Image (tube, rainbow, N blue to C red; front, top):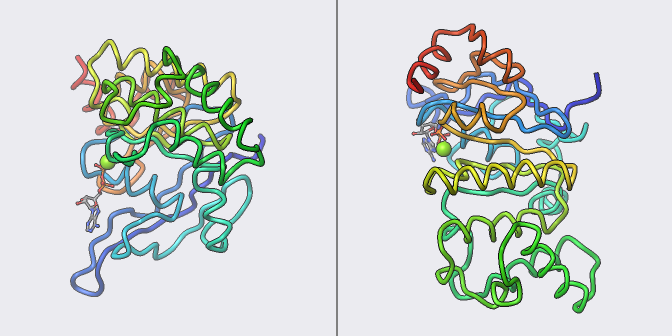
Length: 260
Ligand SMILES: Nc1ncnc2c1ncn2[C@@H]1O[C@H](COP(=O)(O)OP(=O)(O)O)[C@@H](O)[C@H]1O
Ligand SMILES: [Mg+2]
């Protein structure tokens, strides 16, 4: 077995202290294999977003990682320097969210905001970066990349904006994309297209995707590995085929029944 790309070991996250202490993640163990699409699936409030943010050490300051370790490519992230974490964020690991309008700055063009990532995370010069922005927009299936680059976030449709955010997410040539409910705001047809895009990017760019979702249907269409989370705990994990054909935990069975 090769080393997993990401390994969470006994991660416990809580808010508050003593009698006010609430545990949000309870000794979470979780692996993202290299070159995989690994889903973290569970109901609302189960701790999925908290898990994704913990990997990049982006938790709100009220939340404490009380115990556990997080390894990325063998590197101990909870002991990494602030400078190293800034290199990793948007570089080796990037994020895609449900609502791209929150991720983009409204007053800068799409092209400008993708270029910002290239400036920080690549050695490309100005002319090369301009060319790369257009390539990235083309790679995510956006028509007329030249015009798209000049557009502002609010000028794009929801589906196009999501593609633009994915272009920004791959700009730093990441090994991992954390995609938190990436299609929950899109209709079913657009959802399917974004799923196809993620699969294509995974193969062409040789990266892994952590797919955070409440939708087990999406897991079946997209993920090769899955971990099921409820109330801050992983209740089972394995290959998608094994888990969906033979769910071992009552909660997974309930999620599956909700699909029928
Ligand atoms: N900043 C915070 N302070 C206190 N509780 C929080 C905070 N952020 C999230 N929580 C709580 O943590 C739990 C898990 O939240 P979250 O990780 O967002 O779940 P999910 O993404 O699975 O819907 C929820 O009960 C939520 O209310
Ligand atoms: Mg969430």
